Image (cartoon, rainbow, N blue to C red; front, side):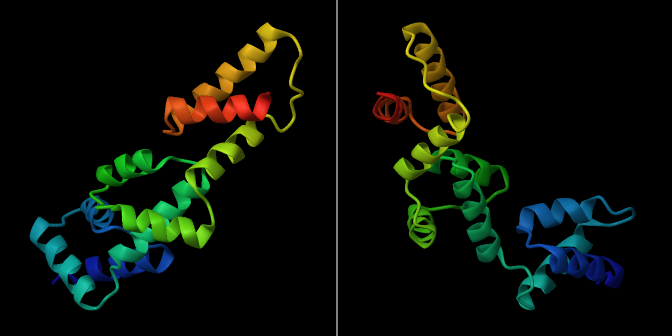
Length: 155
């Protein structure tokens, strides 16, 4: 096993948690490293319980939930990193944080309207509603949930 590569992997993991996929990609950037050496290092890290995929997954979900992302969007982001995220993971972390889908939408609406006054003019009010709606949809929330939350908040 390549000891320098192993030490580098431990150095990376000492700073933050990585998924297996991200760590492999990071190790591939090293010069003169063979794929078999990377596999050996990853296996050794797993045996030593230094590569904690579950912990990384929990922090990953937590981070994106706190940013207001929807469950589907977090799943999509997780698939890009080869993470298998199930509904139980979301439920457990949502309960830990005390945050649900409707709570996230409300917080995002408040964030967008933080320094703005809701205008009385119909066209201006419609502009703000549409802007907030686009923002919520960009976070992965459904159109119907976002629209009903905006209507309740602004009316």
